[in-house]
Image 1 (cartoon, rainbow, N blue to C red):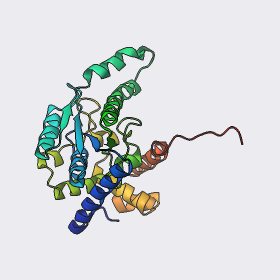
Image 2: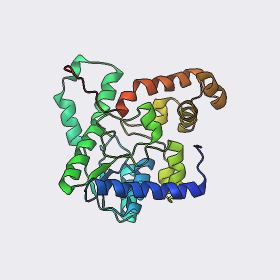
Image 3: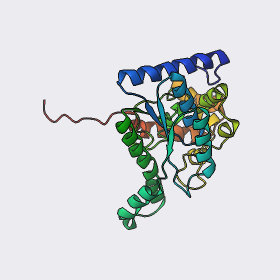
Image 4: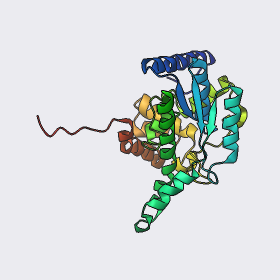
Length: 266
């Protein structure tokens, strides 16, 4: 597998994912699918692929006002309207603040408090996704890509709480190629990737390197089984960063597995 996907393969990839979405929804005996629309690259690509599948789609735009960029909401709505996908806007501030005011944060301090509080947002969105899915007899389609999944860059039981991951087999750079093939608006494709966990937060800032670098490292480390020294030589990425990525993969592997069941009795 190459990180640079030929145009003809992008076409077959589009068809395959859309067919898989349709099969998944049918097998679940569901009547459609819910997608959280952030106005970003990944959710936009999943929306188009799901629309192409022919199943009924419902979009949820769930901004945390004051934290998320207002333009993201507008971009999500514009794409949903363009594709004639019904959607609903639910501002999650009130629910998020309720959780924050409920918990006794005072006995903790440091960066971990900021991160823990930020993870409340994707978990609130997960609850709303499933509330909608339950009411409509829909499934929930996630928007995580292979890059995020491998390094655990998602919130467990938050944006990771979904029924299927249509683009989970594609690296971020490949999703970007697919977005161009699908004619996703340039304003969305060219955005600085952000999980919107706090004001000014960016994915690459948190990860410590660009998605291009990260994908190149992961592609060689995971897909081709290269050694640490080989990955450093091939990619030109600093040893410290490559080691950090390898450690992330190891520490976050549990996020990709079902919870272990302990058997105390034979």
